[in-house]
Length: 296
Figure 1 (tube, helix red, strand yellow):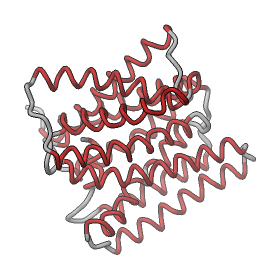
Figure 2: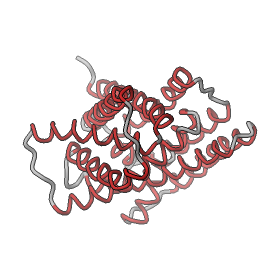
Figure 3: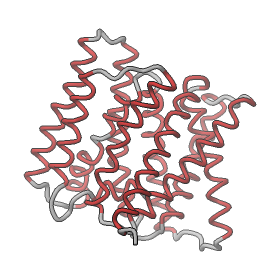
């Protein structure tokens, strides 16, 4: 009989791989159409896919309190996603993913400020270690004489990590009043609605040849979310937390295969430090809560 934790780990690993492939598709779409259009059309297709499942399961509509949380997280996550893919167009995938690993650390400080949680000494130590990782990646850009666009891309992804960290706190509150399907669907509904407001000015209609990539990105995003939600519902977060960091490996491979990107030693060293900082910070009784929520 397959060990339950091992099966959950395998499913979660598949979810991370699936999400990484979606990132590669979204980077390609963002290069050709812009991040705004890519996120908008993927979100709309995602709403249709999740909406069909939601209706088929005859789920009740969210309460007013739940919808307020969906609205807040939809807006916050929307800003994060736009910044991330805008930045990902300008930096290698591996470097962009490495910078997103800061989100769990930042979430610890948001939890302290907004939820009254205590910041442990390990969180402070982990933050210091991870900061050296960011400095290593920045040193790599200086050494490589990175262009202004490249630097701005890194800054955008760093900012995306801050908004994503805040969305994790909102997700913790969402999880108390709604299940993963409702959270995923109505967060996407809010995000799509907000993006549609600016569509006349910032979005372009997708070309026919882009439709398969848009549809595949939406499917992969939904499959990944469901796989991770299934895995985190059957194994402890501390067992699955390391899975999150396999995204760097897939990003490095997909970046090289799809876009010819090289991973510098500075990026590798910085990633190791950031991961080490996160693992130090989240160890203990309350370990890896942000990772669990990200899965939902």
